[in-house]
Length: 251
Image 1 (tube, rainbow, N blue to C red):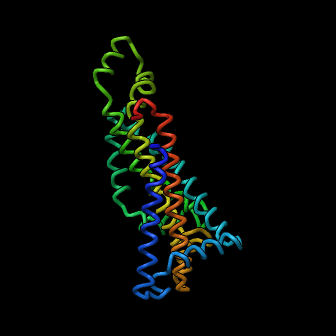
Image 2: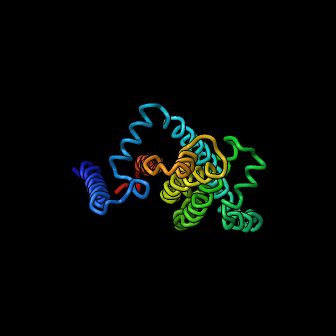
Image 3: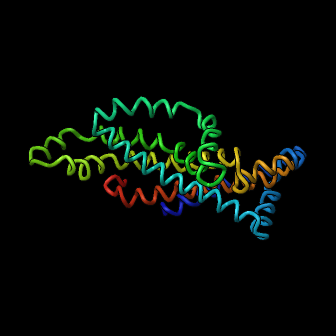
C-alpha cells in the first residue's frame, strides 16, 4: 500500500496541475504562441515520436548526460577521497577546485568549445564539470563525519588505512555520496542543455532553441517535458540503487 501511494499521489498532483493548466488556457483565452494547451503538447510529443523526429534528440541528450555524469561522478569521488585522506592534497588542490566551481560554467563554455571542438567531447566535459562539485563536497563531508569512536576501535585492532577507508569511512559516507549523485542527475541535464544551446546540431536543448525561433511553443514544452521526465527517472534510479547499496540506512 505504501508503494502504491507513492505512485498514486504524484499522479494525482500531475492530473490536478494539467487540469488547472488546461482550464486557464481555455477560460483566459491564452493564444498558443504564449501558452499551449496540454493537448497541444501531447500531440507534439505523439507526432515527434510517431515520425521519429524526437528520438535522435532524446538519444543525443541522454548520451551526453550519461557520459558526462559518469565521468564527473567518478572524478568527484576520487578527488573527494584523496582530499579527505590527505591534508597536503587539500592545501594544494582544494582552493583551485573552489575557484573552478565559482566560475560560471557558461563562461567556460566557449573555452571548452575551442579546446574540445563542437562535437560530443565538449558536451561531455561541460556536463562533467557541472555535476562534479556537489558530489565532491558530499564525499569529503561524509568521510570526515565518520564516527571517531569506531575509527579508534578499528585502529586498536591494528586495522590498516585501506581497511578503514573501504570498510568504515566509505560505508559511513555512502548516504551523502548518493545524495550528491541525486543532485548530479539534475545538474548533468542542465549542463547538457547549456552545451547544446552553445553549439549543437541535435539534442533536446537544440530542439528547444530551434523551436523558439519558429515560435513553436508546443514543441518547446515537449522538449522541457522530456527533460523533466528524464531527470525524474534518473533520480529514481539513483534512489533505487541507494536503497539496495546503503541498506543499513533504510527506514
